[in-house]
Structures are given as structure tokens and as C-alpha cells.
Length: 218
Image (cartoon, rainbow, N blue to C red; front, top):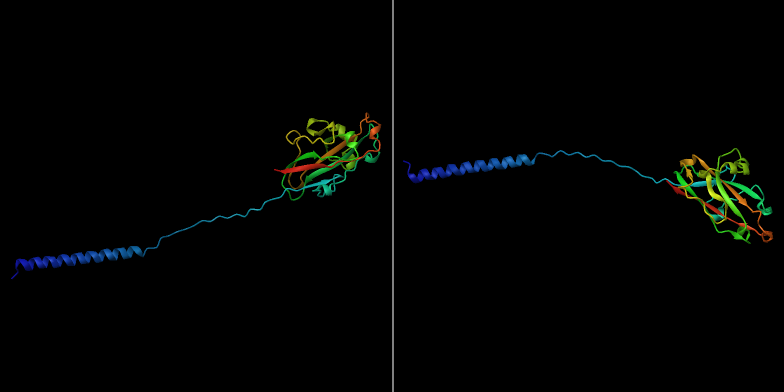
């Protein structure tokens, strides 16, 4: 015979069994989820960078190029008229060609004048510089004729009659661009003059001038 208390006790036992089964199912469900692995993937990129260099070389004969990176290693310009025997009215010409080395990046050039040394002849001398075309030899590249022919504004680096301390025109005015890896050369033709008005005081004097052609990479 079932009493009310026995019925209630039976219901409580069944309720506990159901809760126990549900709890077990939840635990099993969580355990199954934890065993799933996540997929992943990655992409990578890398690069190595090496800086180039900007290197200029010069030649006094338009062909034999080497470095003259300091005043102590400056190239000696070969003037047509011997600089040791100038007389009033004389103009003498000399070539200095510049290009980039190989390898080298491209750049622009700017001519600047140093401070003359010597016993004072610089006070009498004047000069000019023009860009001239490349010729077969240095003697053909920079002469009175080639200098006169290079009279266009774009070729005049230093105006005729300038003092020896005058710098060259800015690269924005005179295009002085050198391409990479020795692709082109610029031929600077220097014309140094002892004017006809030079008085007797100039006799026996001397001077030394060093010009710098400074390059900027581009």
C-alpha cells in the first residue's frame, strides 16, 4: 500500500535521477566541444635592402677617368697656353670632364671656386666656364672655337670676365645632370684670361686656384 509520503519520496528520487542524467549529459557535451581543434594559417613577406652609392670621377683628357675626391688629389688641368707664360690679352683653355662611376646613382653637379693662392696674379686674371660637347680628344673638346660655340645660356656655367672666386651657376639654371653608371659625361671647358688692361704690376706674379665640382645624388 502506497502512502502519500512514499509517493512523494518516489517522486523526489525520480527527480534526482533525471537531474543527475541531465548533468551528466552537459558534462559530456562540454567535453566533446573541448576536443575540437581550431584551424589557422599565416602568410609572410620579407625583403632585403641595400643602399646604393654616389661616386663621381673626372678626367682632364675627356677619356681617362679616375677619382679626385680631395684637394690633395686634385687633377692638374692642362691649359693650352702655358700658364707660366701668360701675357696681357692671352686666354688659355683647359678641359675637365666629370661623370658618375659604375656603379653609381645619378646626380647633379655644382662648380665652386676655392680661395686662390700665390703671389697675387689672381687679382688680374678672369675666367669663364662653359659646357662643351664630347670630342675625339681633349685638345678638340676645349678650344677657343668650341668655347665660343657653346654660347647658349644653358651651357654657360661661369660668365666670361668673372673673378676667379666666382662660383658656377646653380644647377637649376644650368642643367648639369649626370646619369647613373657613367651614362653621360659633362665637359667643363675653363677659359682663363689675363686682360689686355693688366698693368706692369702683374709681371712675374703667380697664382694657384682649385675648383670643386660638387655632386648631389638624385
